[in-house]
Length: 375
Image 1 (cartoon, rainbow, N blue to C red):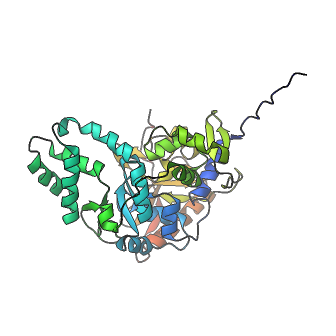
Image 2: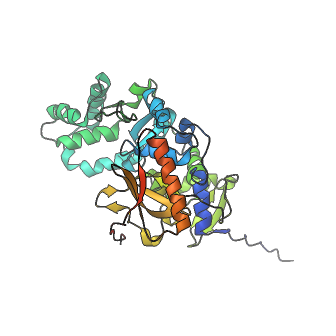
Image 3: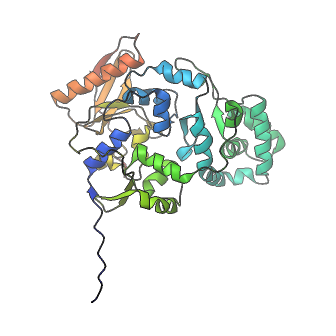
């Protein structure tokens, strides 16, 4: 008798709303979490921190009982730091993640060096790294000070390329008071090891990184995680983990991976409005961003190099906002019903109460600035 082989059942399909609700839940945006600021920074694998305020706004949207002073105190105590990691951008990470995630994404920093080859002609990069380490560990240095000091050693090289190479080669953190709430300070750098008093991980574990990424951003494809990390060649890591992961397909047929016990809420689960900072990772950490950003709104939160803070309605990008002298101005992409406007206003008032408890701001509906969608 001829033996037949059973055909594997096709992977279940997760629609856009299902992916939206799953991602919002893991991003602590479906309901506010009681976890601490430090635990949230760890769970979220860091917060975009190109500017000082975004990490604070990111946590205000996600945590119940958050106050800006909580994150500021963690930074002052060196329990969280600001450092260039994913996608060559500054993130706020816990000290532990700083010492493990930065080595994980070092290949991306090495690739970044190739953009500056002309300006680094004749430069011994090992010697540059050693000299730069000595300089910033002697005392924190600004990029301008690094440029000047390194240009003495290589007068024919491009000074900006020298300083950027040091940032690529070394895990340089921004020292306080930069990043503290209500304080100001220029960007001064030292090594993570010097600032934190312990060495970086010598052999980061990519499997653990995949699991943590899925816990914070899943279900997700290999390309999604590569977009988040700025890395390539992660397929083999996912394949090693395949026996312990679930697989799905999105509506376009792309294979998605997920942790078996991760939340995947009903697509009809209510999603309250949320106000997010510019560069929030929920908008940037997937190759296919339609789970949060509808196709027709792609590119509408940017003008040139300027990104705008955004807000979500029903879990999806719905507009931008800004804080003026007397009001938080909401600029929706399209009309909001009276009920939606009440929800958005209540969320805006909550944000103001958390971030500016001693100030008096109103909430005002503005006009959407004409921002053509990206091609």
